Length: 257
Length: 259
Image (cartoon, rainbow over all chains, first blue to last red; front, side, top):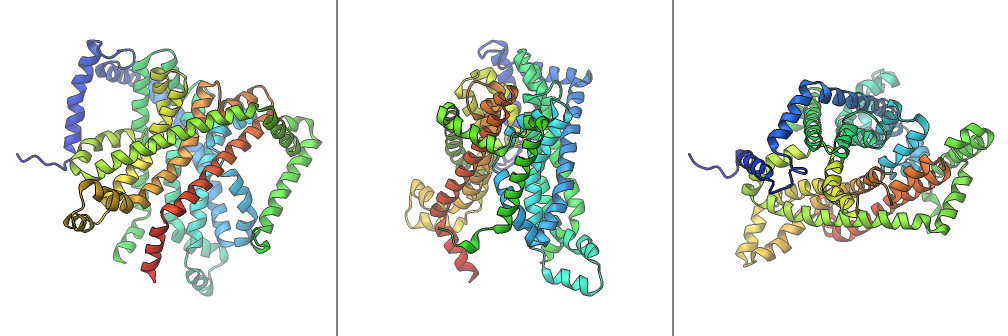
């Protein structure tokens, strides 16, 4: 068999080869097993926590908050972005407010949200919505601005009402860029749900990971991180699936051009 | 000075209206004052904090971690990115690891960092490095891969050594991508620094803001947020300024192409 120097199997083989080394180093206590518990123990922990329902529960709690905040941001920002893109006056009015609020690093919104909403779900949902809002808003605005005006005017000439022209022409034409914003926000969403749960929560996967560390249940901590990585991966794949099915026409169009 | 025509009057008017409404409502209702202290009081808090030098120490702590983490991440990620972009073999070994670690939200690394490094500065710098490295690394790999191989061969034909080819062809060719990655990481750095300050406490603007919230000194809390936002804004401006200098040749080149 010829060795393929570009196959991704190389890396997988490397990872698989490293596992016994890690296992041996940890079991013989050459590295501190408190910090690096043997791989088998982490996997066992992951398995047991999954069977007992602990990890799925924490992930679900986090996902509920994350999705609520994410959808809230999308529902507010896509219409607002469209309005800003179509009417420049509205954009100019809001420009300075946006420019002032956008550089605020999202984590420092957590204390403000705690002040208003306490430690409940609303606090996390608010923080997530706040931070997911920017990419969606600005990408929608950009997308709408770059829609060919002739398209819009043609539609109006053929008797489309303003609302219909927006729904049938502007929105689809801006959709690729709106989806780009939504994709960026997806990563931000997961980061912020973990942050808000680390700072002020008593459940959720962010809390679970930090709490496991504080109680020195290190194998549980790694198991929690593993489940987070899997969740992130799954969300990304799901989004790509959605993206490809919604924007199939766009792909075909740009390829032809 | 800016010409008057460029000042965004409607924007300024909206901003002022929002601030005035805030001030008015807050002064009118005592229960609201706890959550939204009047803007004027926030400004007074800010003024007092600046002169008591309390804020100054926190700002310096944050700034130090921010700069150390960001610069270390940039150096490390550009170095690794060039290797991984240049050598398909090296990339094939690293790819599964990259694809496994990347979807994990970077803040989840904070507990691991606490475990290994305690709650000192080193831990906050480490998590910042970890999180900031990803965008730079991925973009550098892409940038190096997209360099026209002909350029490299031409350079080698004209007798450039490996090191010289790297400096004169690879780095400039990949720099637009690298700069994009660096720009994304700038915002991420501030997120990670403030988050880790809130989680472990002690010093820094993230800690300050959370602590003022807990002691219900909301004026100070908003003042702290204002300073962090200013820090983020300033860092971004500085970056754009530097970018303009470093990438000017690229703009000129691509502008020439469209003519």
